Image (cartoon, rainbow over all chains, first blue to last red; front, top):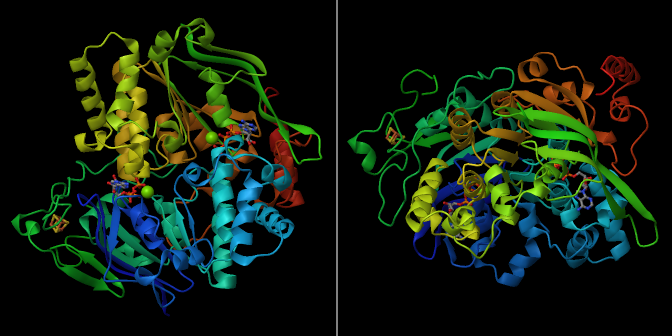
Amino acid sequence: MSALLEVEELQVTFGGRTAAVRGASFRVEKGETHCLVGESGCGKSVTALAVMSLLARGGHRSAKRMSFAGTDLTSLSDREMARLRGNRMAMIFQEPMTSLNPAFTIGSQMAEVLTRHKGGSRAAALDRAAELMGRVGITAPGMRLGQFPHQLSGGLRQRVMIAMALMCDPELLIADEPTTALDVTVQAQILRLLANLKREFGLSILLITHDLGIVARVADHVSVMYAGEVVERAPTAALFRAPQHPYTRGLLSCVPVPGRVQRDKPLGSIPGVVPAIGAGFAGCAFRSRCAHADETCARAIPRREAGDAHDYLCRLEPDWAELQPA
Amino acid sequence: MTAAIEVENLRCEFRVRTGLMSAEKRVVAVDDVTFSVPAGSVLGVVGESGCGKSTLARMVLGLLKPTAGTVLVDGRRLFDLDRKARARLIQPVFQDPFASLNPRRRIKDIVALPLEAQGTFSRGEIERRVAGILERVGLSAAMGERMPAQLSGGQRQRAAIARALVLEPRIVICDEPTSALDVSVQAQILNLLADLRRDLGLTYLFISHNLAVVEHVASEVAVMYLGRIVERNETDALFRSPRHPYTKALLESVLTPEPGKGVPDIGLGDAMPDPANIPPGCRFIRAAASRSNAAAMRHQRAWSGLPREW
Ligand SMILES: Nc1ncnc2c1ncn2[C@@H]1O[C@H](COP(=O)(O)OP(=O)(O)OP(=O)(O)O)[C@@H](O)[C@H]1O
Ligand SMILES: Nc1ncnc2c1ncn2[C@@H]1O[C@H](COP(=O)(O)OP(=O)(O)OP(=O)(O)O)[C@@H](O)[C@H]1O
Ligand code: SF4
Ligand SMILES: [Mg+2]
Ligand SMILES: [Mg+2]
């Protein structure tokens, strides 16, 4: 397999102060679904936006390597990047309203994506839009195409975003929490659609989600982020069977499962909050919350191998303690 | 005891144009919904995407005028209350935090606004309360200094929750309040909501697609489908023995964290209902029919076994 997207030591800062991403590395292979998980605010969306060259003003990115299908993304001009974006690599944003224009109908926004990149008539583009809306489970696409974003429910907007991202048959789809506004039956339909596209057309997907049920069911590989770093990378089965990083173990132990919820008890969570990471921060960012922290955790932390394509960032040896989540 | 929220025969229609040439259609977003939420309890609302949950929430909040039906909050019509009293009584957490936070104000000013609007809190009291609630939702003081666009999705969602809770209102309408949070931060927020409910007797209307979350927080659950409540039951009973086929379909579609199991195909996908063109009879049958005739028949029977008003 060859990597479609390769990111090595990505750094992103805002206004020179906030270090949102601190040396994240991962690769998305051709035709695979790679999931990015991690605590709220750990840098998942910023990582995705950095890859797409869509960082907000004040955001600065640097990377040892960032390539898409062999092209070095850091060397592309704005125009070259704009030609890729929405076309060969498309993104579904976390909050649909940030990227849908309230002043235009759904139909005109969807058609514009296709005509801009591939030409063709507006009528043909609208047909394609209607077809894709059907595939993401939107009935009466004709009516929806003529509506404005505020007239749609949260889940309809999210599905419009998904359909819009698929307009140009991208090779890489970056999906940032694409199903949070969908009920589980529609969610299942969308996930199956993505799996079909992956199988039929070799679509590669970088999927950001905090739903570990989705991760378990659709991911080939998983990268776990914490405070701007990728702290563990593993094939999906290995991650769930033998998580190594204490953060990963903590996270997995918090997942509530319907039917097994204990109603009178508080839900499990990882105590504490992510520390403010300033310039010159060294050592493990999880140490203020880690039950296994000792003084060596304030120094440089080794990346350890725990198996095939499985590594993690921690002072502890693989399979420390029993494999029970901490 | 008066119910905290009492909704009777609530209906909401939208008129939409389906094309330049075609006539207007009516979308029935909420159709004849009746329920009441006792003070100090939590009604969980789950349901299909687009079935009218947010529309229902907006009507309860008095932000949208129902086409028909009545809403009583704490035994009164919201329209009879002035804005300050209304704010102390009921607060929303909206589904899309980005759209509901003023992009030009700092987070701590946004959270302070409900307190300032009351006109009765001193500067010091406001600062103290804002700092307290930001900490409880897991946002540092530094986050309070930022603009909404400078936060992550989940941080914005927590800011919206802080704004809703800062006045300690009696009732909170939560529309997907934790959808952008990882499981650990989500647990922190849900535990906070549970604490407030225990300590201050708050009442919540809690809309969510996450069934495990609903199971944990709700005393009672209403399942909506195409504008109607198709099943309502006490939480334990609903999860133990769901009766409506749509509820069953929901529970079957939950993705537990078990690798290798794939995504279940319960075959609902191709026949999502169209709210502008609702089929007669059971709203679910058309969708169920796409599965197989036998299944549809089973569902038909299951459906007709339910009490009339459902
Ligand atoms: N424009 C900005 N200016 C300053 N800081 C920012 C900006 N955008 C994001 N950040 C910060 O960078 C960090 C990473 O944000 P990011 O949006 O990537 O988080 P995330 O992992 O996607 O979280 P969530 O799961 O909550 O969406 C956060 O702490 C956030 O506050
Ligand atoms: N302002 C509006 N104009 C026209 N139609 C609208 C308007 N607001 C909502 N609708 C329609 O009403 C129906 C119900 O929408 P609502 O937002 O209540 O759904 P929901 O249950 O909250 O869905 P979701 O889970 O996707 O957020 C949808 O078909 C939607 O398109
Ligand atoms: S390096 Fe130390 S603090 Fe960090 S996760 Fe490992 S044991 Fe815990
Ligand atoms: Mg994000
Ligand atoms: Mg909604």
